[in-house]
Image (cartoon, rainbow, N blue to C red; front, side, top):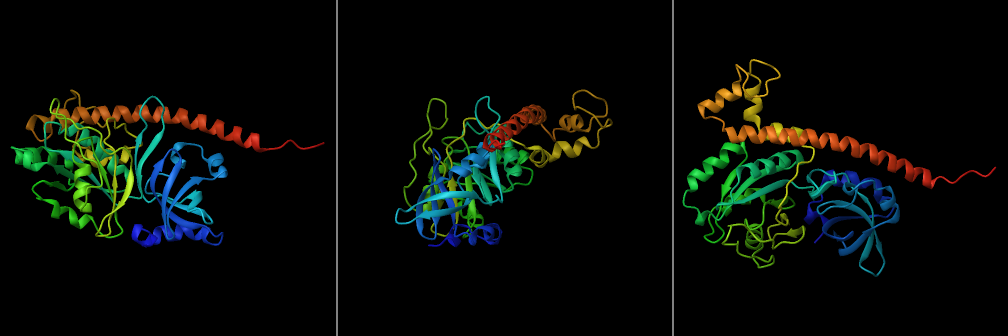
Length: 352
């Protein structure tokens, strides 16, 4: 096995060329646990940590390595350990705002080609949550695919598919049943050797079950959903790169209880193309789609082409993004002050 098996391509080769003369080694972060990283390299798997200079220069959480990142490392001879000195530019990244009050970016997965948005065809199927996932997926730079699991338990499959396709906006929608081994062949075109696929979704939707099936072994722990509320239990507890037998790289992720937006203006346009296109035909350019005369969006709602719930979701997400922009402006100012404090602390006073 070499790094070429892990998705190393011309994009990353060009980025790494600046480090080759300094005897650095290229590696890919397979697992992160409290600022320690398991990294895949040509010399096998290494346990790595970032250098002191790296930590000093890092101004925010996003500057640190994430699962899927390519990094420049120096190996410690005879230890199977190494030191990370740089993170290579990311080709794509799926990010969300960290939980809580802090306005920080959490990179869920980096350098991914395709995102499988996994949703279960049970009572927990939520179109509004799916809209959030789609919005952040478009922003990531990867291509989303909606995967609907547990089709064998769904009595109104065609109706559920129609509901999902009404918000998919051209994104492929694939229903599968791992138990009955149906529909999974439709995923294979996305599982090409060297391509990286992230599995994202809530707890209990079947991400680990699908991972085990694609691996051909019981590697990921699986639990049943709770009968009381039809919701899932957390089984996957960390993000990890997994190499599939056919050569694709999978990132199984823990179920997300909270999915807060992060820098998603272009993603909003991709996810709500129907509303934004209709809005161009409104009588007033600043139409809020509330009760203005000549509103093309409200007309489509009356005709049944767009649901009122979808418009409400669009407005809610717009408000969240506006609030996030204001918070990020304050955060940027704070980080700039911290950066100058670091620079000032590193400057020694001149002797007179």
